[in-house]
Length: 407
Image 1 (cartoon, rainbow, N blue to C red):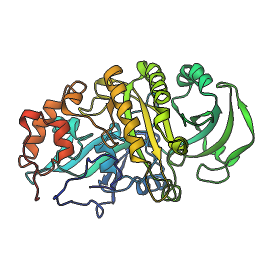
Image 2: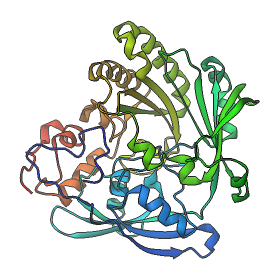
Image 3: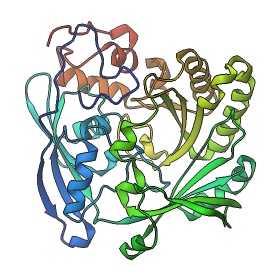
Image 4: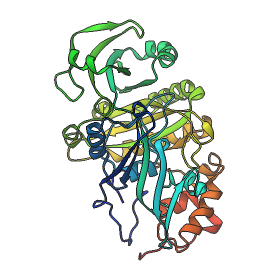
């Protein structure tokens, strides 16, 4: 197990013994590319946390190309579940991998890349922890770069109208809103800028960074309420103190093809409106939904497999600093989101977020699912890394083995 960040039960099993990667967190090597301006190949131990890797790369003039909103995950956990950021031409963190090393269920050390054990490479970059213990990962990373992040308050109806144009012009775009609250949607646009611009605006981990008074954002018709510039990871992910002081929450994400995303978002908004009376009024402000974008790839169990560019519909019920969001409200709304998107818009869930998917659901979307299970059986013949969550999703019902209870 890595950091235990997943909302799903992907890393849980009653009666199991867990292998922690907490002592495997070193940066092992940096190999500059022929042109150092293009970045480097960086090899790390798989247990390194993203919040450790980011500043280690910064000190060497390097950066991860993209990140999600949180950097608490171990790198192994992040890639194994398909963790992503946002950007129409940008893939998940797994697409930055050039090689990895796994200790499989036979006790064998397996090195995988496009050139060597390519089937393992294509499967293990989003391997769900099912193939063995990832011990080392090599990433291709770019030179350090800076991003400007603008948060723009815009009416939801207006955002829907201008969003196609925004997505064409700005590759790092996402947006969110609280559907049961009267507030506007928030559009986040990140643009690569020079290091010199950092001196002109507050850093993205610096407070306050609000724009006073808010100014017009001509492209969207909204008002810029926050504006910052920083090294990329600080514009993409929260700081550790911000994470540690967050409100707890429960989350689902559903991936739908970009070309179907406008219709899917509209249908989800209608579903939320239909269910509003079933959500206690004092919990309305806790319901969040947002959308990010991810480029297609060729990884067997990535939601973007087959080169499918996705929009990712996120749904959250927020709680407090002591407790997650109301479980009954979350189940009511999340089951509707999963059913709606999977049945009408080719949706598939994030492996590390709460979901109710079955093998039958996922086999429709992942043509390589039988090949993945065959590879898993070869690399883990005693099912040491199979748990109930994975068994229900990656093994055909007629072939489901017993889950190993003792490692």
